Image (cartoon, rainbow, N blue to C red):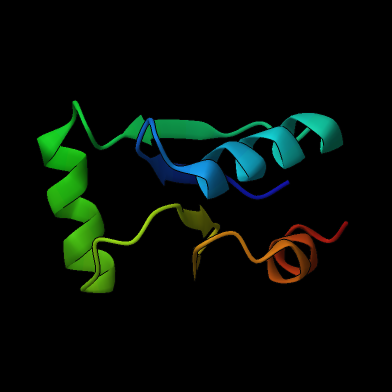
Length: 77
């Protein structure tokens, strides 16, 4: 399975939905909480030019927001 990284903030409803989806499907992921990790926040902005969360990285692909259909397609589930 591809590496999955999710950039989040604590109050983000869509971040929680994405993490719940990953947990349901047994997808292992690395989470970066941008409210406490300025380096990862800068990294996300550099990669996307945006401050929108969740930002989900699946392999070499990036999904801004929680697009369940696109995330499922990229994960092959």
